[in-house]
Image (cartoon, rainbow, N blue to C red; front, top):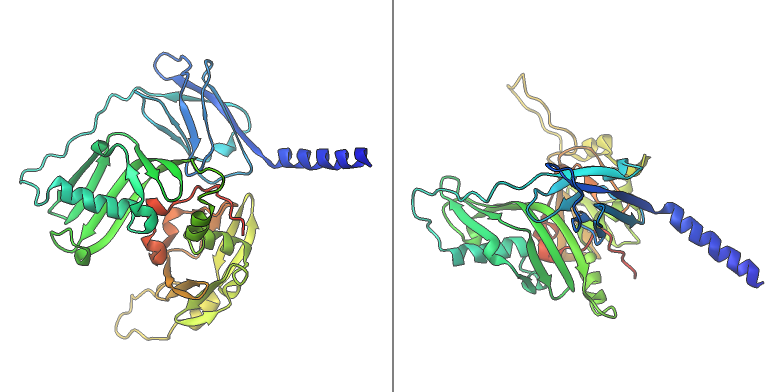
Length: 362
C-alpha cells in the first residue's frame, strides 16, 4: 500500500513538472560581449524573477505560459523588453546596451501654472488611486518623478528617471513600476477633478510578496473580486453565474455566453463577439442623405455593463474596439487596446494591482 501511494505521488509530481514552463538565457554587455552578473530578469506583472550568475545565466520556472514581456535590467544599461519570450524553447542570448541618455528636461517657455506639490498630488491620485489600497501606498523614490504641465494641450505629464519603488502597505506587496507613459488630460488648464477628461499610464511591473502568515489574504480577495483580472478569467472560462458577474447589453440583462463566445486558439482562448445577436439588439436607425455613410460595427454604439454580485458600486462599462481578442490562462488579454473600461474597473489604479500570477482561493 505504501508503494502504491508513493507511485501516485510521483505521478502527480511528474505531471506538475511537465506542465511548467522554463525561461532561461544569458545576458551580455553589447559592447564588450562579456556576461553581466547580477542583471535582474523578471516577467512583467508577476512575482517571477531571477538574477544572472557569473556566466550571465538566468533561469525562471513558471506554472504556464504568460502573455507578457520578459524584462531585463542592469544599472547603467538600457532596459530590454522581450515580447513573447516563451517562443524560445532553449536558452537564448540577450545583449544590453549602455544607457548613454539621461532624462531630458522639458523646456517650458512660460512658468508652470501649478507647483510641483500640486502636480504630485494629482500624480499620486491618478497613478496609485484613491481607494484604500491606493492611499496606503508610498512611493519611496518620489524625487525620480519629473512632473510638468503642457498648457497647450491641458495635459499633466510625468517621466521617471528610475523605476518607482512602491510599498503597498494594505495589500502587502513591494512593487517596482517602470513607468513608460503617464498623462492626465483636462478640458481646460486645470488640475480639478471636474475638468478631468481622461488619464492614462503604462509600464512594466514586478511584485514582491512581503505578507506574513497570510495576513493580507482577505484584502487581496476583496480587490480581486470584480476586478478586470477576475472578469477576464471568468470570460475565459464562461462561468459567469458561478463568479457572480451579470452582463447587461443595452440595459437588458443577458446570458453572457450568448454574446461572448470562447474557443481554443493555440495556447490562448479566442474571444469572439456574436455580431448577429448584437446587431439584433442594437436599436435600428436610418441615415438619410449620406450616400457614403459607413455603418459602424455591430458591437459599437451599445452599452455593455458588468455588475459583480449585483453590487451597483462595482458597475463597469466596457467599450469593445474589435470583435475578436485573446485571453491567456492568467487572465491577461490582448491586444491591450481592444477593451476600454469605465466606471469601477476604470477607476482601479496601480495601488489596486495584484500580480498576474495571483491565485484566488475562495
